[in-house]
Length: 100
Image (cartoon, rainbow, N blue to C red; front, side):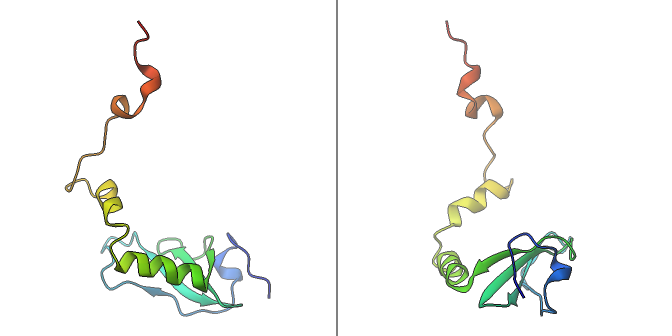
């Protein structure tokens, strides 16, 4: 079976989908599963039939190592409002500055 990035999850062979025990109780999480050909499938836990992102096992392993090593910790502040406010549109859009 040819597994392609973005294919509907329902078209993948039956898989054991797993979600982190630290997942958000509202259900906005990702789930992963082993996919054919030594790949890893990732899906949105709220859209179980939706598209799956397919990654080579080596790429997923490198990503997880980086997460465990704290390489992406700075990104957490982008997604958690109580940790740091996001910049306003005026602070990030330099094209709107008055040219005078």
